[in-house]
Amino acid sequence: MMVRKIFRYMTLISFLCLILSLGISLGVFNAYYGERLREEMGMEASLIAAALQDTEDPLSYLRQADKAGPEKRLTLIDANGQVIYDNHADAGSLENHQERPEVMEAKENGFGMSDRLSVTQGTRVYYYAVRLEDGKILRVASHSYSVAQLVKRMAIPVGLMFLIVFLLLMYLSAKLTRHILKPIEALDIDATPREDVYDELLPFIEKIRVQKEEIKRQERKMGRQRDQLQALTQNMQEGMLILNNATEILSINPSAAKIFDTDTSIVGENLLHLTREMQLLKAGKEAVDGNYTQLEMTHDGKTYRVFCSPAYRGEKKGAILLFLDITESVLAEQIRREFSANVSHELKTPLTNILGYSQMLGHGMAKPEDAQRFAQKIETETERVVRLVDDIIKQSQLDERSSFEKQPIDILSAAQKAVERLEETARKNEISIQVNGISAYVLGNASMLDELIYNLTENAIKYNKPSGSVVLRIEENEEEVCLLVEDTGIGIPKEEINRIYERFYRVDKSHSRQIGGTGLGLSIVKHIARLHQARIETESTLGKGTKISVYFPKLH
Image 1 (cartoon, rainbow, N blue to C red):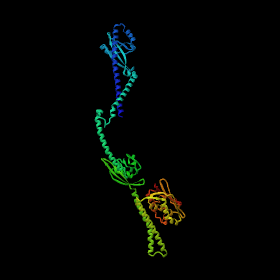
Image 2 (image 1 turned 90 degrees about the vertical axis):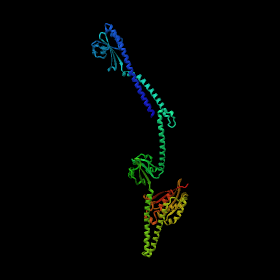
Image 3 (image 1 turned 180 degrees about the vertical axis):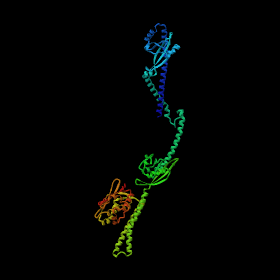
Image 4 (image 1 turned 45 degrees about the horizontal axis):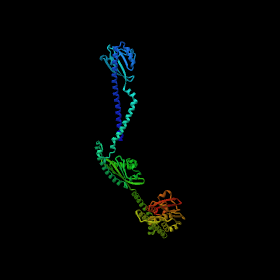
């Protein structure tokens, strides 16, 4: 940029100098040429005037002189200004020349000169007049090219000369520019000796050195602050946004970018480009205005508590928005409330029944033949309460366990053991049950996996049809071991498949109570699967049966 600028200026100066030189040269040449022409015309007029003094027939002499040099205009004027002879025009048709400057001057001084521009011919005409002894005036006129005509006639040679000189000046300008800038381009502020630098640049270089050191110091300081801020924000689990006074995003950490499914390209944009959540936009604006706000926001199925704090830097205002993920705590609170309500509901019915039958027996209100039936009812309801309490305890224990002892478990062997304990139940329900597949190992807890297999198999038996079947099959691929439990039972409506793993959820509540279901079995299965990093897939057709597949990470 600097090279082009200097070259452009030098070329422009050279061009102007060339034009000025050409103009001055033409002006000087034209003045010199006019002066020389006047001198020649004066000599010629004096010679002709002297000859006219010695001749008896002046007109005849002038005609002879015209033949010898017709390029000059010869005019003979009498003392009254009337033209007597003109070699370029009819004398009778010419106007009186009494008022012509050269004629008037010749009458007064003996000779006179003047020049006039001919508009028609575009030339300058020079006049020289001499007074004869008899009072007549002899005038000699000669045409000379004007500067414009000279330029026009000399356009080609002058143009070629101008082009050659201009190209030469451009070459010299480019070479001179490179020569001037070469020391500057090779300048190393830190390493170049002072004697190798233009004296005019020394104060500038010294100032740059001082500023460079100051910039380095500021960069180191800013680098430390940036590293501290990045270490603080980049590794935060909480999302953080920093806004300026126009609610434009100055910074966004990875956690906040993940929340809003964006990246750092959002920096510089208004908060509106990040979210259309009016509650958050309002809170951000209030924080920029200096008011601390706090709110709960739901986004993409998660719940966040957002702290919006004003930030000040001098007179500039901004805001810091901190997003705390409280989804688990909200969900846990919701589950706790639902669990408490469900437990109360599930316990209330059997306990009420037990209380009612007990009161009837205790007060002698039951007939002797009904006493045994009431006792059996009390026993059945008590067993139901015990099973429910046991499942609640198991669920609570699973909720509290984040770590447990693990060891290699053969899923095929575990399935066979669980089936052995359920053979009597299957026989009572007229259900055939079988285990097949391959021996495959996973890393897990033996009692938990036994509970998982037992619950899945027991459900397949209880919710089956008379003379139905249950098949447990063990399969594996390169990455996973699959436990498949398939029955020919009543099936599950398609719209309820995703809800069967909820606590206390029953597809057929009346059937579940008849068979003594607590509604926690599949919830326990899901919890155990999650603790073992396993995934569950459920397929079911209403009235035809259900297939549940549990995929465990394979033990390599």
